[in-house]
Every structure is written in structure tokens, then in C-alpha cells.
Image (cartoon, rainbow, N blue to C red; front, side, top):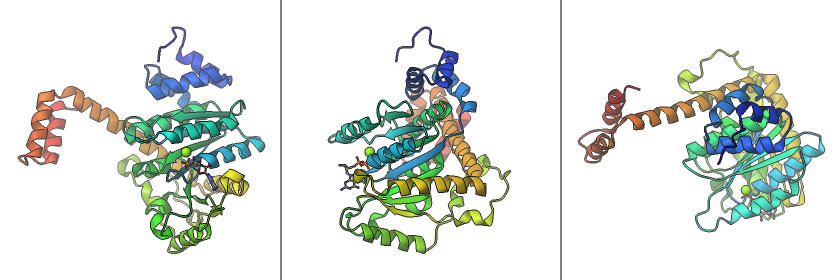
Length: 342
Ligand SMILES: Nc1nc2c(ncn2[C@@H]2O[C@H](COP(=O)(O)OP(=O)(O)O)[C@@H](O)[C@H]2O)c(=O)[nH]1
Ligand SMILES: [Mg+2]
């Protein structure tokens, strides 16, 4: 992106504070594209962020996440709250059709100054996208949006990543995926604060709800085991009240296309927000977020440094040695670290 000569971090940050949408769009582009202004801008905005409630919406493609996000955003606006939306679109190597559908539907919301929507293209590695998403969320948060909805496709790692990015994670399921218990992916119980069984107008919604209830009945997994980030998360926070382990994820049936069940879903999000605050869990989650962001950044920076300082031939030689089993990968990594002294 060409950087206008007059564009400065100060001017962008001021624009953001004054609610200038053009400044906001520019700021997001800098951050998303990683221009030279990105880091100083994030540094300037960071202290202003931290007030928004971050709501992750995840689930398999086609379950109705975008439609739900649209409905939730409109419902929040009716309650007088401002809403930022970050949609992480799936790249479909075959059609790419989902992108267009999402954009069209999102257009319902265009023209309202209390809403800002950013669709992010899936590019680079998942780690790269997760970081870019987290950065865009910081910008929207600093700009004062009170609720930020983050739509991501539940594929592998990103489910865990969204759990550490959002305060409240909604897992969206839809009926008709065959054996309900099988279709509900392992791992969602650990990240879901709220379930939405969308497409409740379709056959099988009740079976999906029953399957979820059954899985939850077998014991809600201890959420806090995912908080173990070792040394990055020293235990300097007060221990959580026993009551804080008592949030049982509610299950909502919704029909996003008919705006049914949206108000109840929103009420659950707000109940969860209050619960996080009153139990002290919000502090823990913020801490967890800080730890995973720091880890993510450290990992990227250290890797970049090692690669920068290693001659291609040396890297080639090591890869060859590992491939031919003359060297194990741990020793190879050790040698790289030692020879680059990062
Ligand atoms: N029958 C029915 N269709 C829905 C419902 N919610 C969404 N859809 C449709 O399902 C398709 C996928 O929705 P979308 O929101 O793009 O799903 P996403 O991929 O999870 O974001 C679209 O054609 C929607 O119109 C619902 O509650 N009932
Ligand atoms: Mg979508």
C-alpha cells in the first residue's frame, strides 16, 4: 500500500480517537499489510485498547456463522452498542464463492457509523493470519467499538487461537451432518462458552442439541488447563473463585436467516461477559491473551532471526542431514541456534 507522505502515526491515532472512518480503514490496512507504520501504530494504540468485549464465532463452513454475526451486530446496534466485525474468510481453492456471499450479506450493515466491518483474506500461514487478526482487533478496540465479533472457520489450530483471542467464544453447529456426536468435533467443548445450534428450521436440530447436552453432561472440561503457557503465564493473579468454574455453556437453537433466537444468544453473551468480570476470569483471560500473543510474536521474530543469520547452504546441508537421518532434528535445531546466537 502506498503510504501518503503526510500520514503519520499521530495523525492516524488522532483520527481514530475522533471517529474518522477513513483513518480507521487506513490504520487497519497498515496493520494488515504490515507496512512500516504498522508496529509504531500498534504501539501507540495498544494502551487505548482493552475495553471492548471480544466475541469469537467459530464453526465449520456453511453452519451460518456470517448470518449469525450479521444478526448479532444488528441486535447490538438496536441496544445502542457499537460493533466491530472481523471476518476471516476461508480460502476455497475450488470456488471462492463464500467470499462473495459474505460480503453481500454484510452489506445490510453498511452505512451505519456504529458498525465497522473488515473482511480479512486468508493469506500466509495460520499463525500469520491469527496475528494479523489480533492486530486488527486491537485497532478496532482502540477506536472505541464496544463489541467486536470475530468470525473464523473452525479448522485445527485456529479454534484454539480464537479461544485465546476472544473473551466469549460461540461455537456454531448445524444439524444434518450425519452422526451428531461424531460431527461435533473433539476440542469444541473446551473452547465453547456458548453453543449455537443454527439452522434449527432443519431436521435434526434437536438431535444435535441432545448430543451436545450429552457431551456436556459427561463433565465440562477444565477450561483452565489451556491457560498453561508455562513461564509466560506466571501465577501472580488471585486464584479463581470456585464458583468461576461453574459456567455451563448454554445451548441455543437459532435460525439466523429468520432472525430467530438471536436476542437470546445475545443475552447469553452479555451474561457471560458479566460472569467473566464478576468471577475474576476476565483478568485471567486477558492474561492468557497477552501470553499467547507474546509467544506468537516471539516465535515469529526468533525464527526470522535464525533464518536471516543462516546461510542458505548451511540450512540446506542441515535439512539434507536430517532427511537422510544422519542427524536428528533436535540436534540440527540446536546447531542452528548455537551458530546464530539469537
Ligand atoms: N435454513 C437455514 N439456512 C441458513 C440459516 N443460517 C444460515 N443459513 C444459510 O446457510 C448458508 C451458509 O451461511 P453462512 O452464514 O455463509 O455460513 P458460514 O460459512 O458459517 O459463514 C447460507 O446460504 C445461509 O443463507 C438457518 O438458520 N437456516
Ligand atoms: Mg462466513
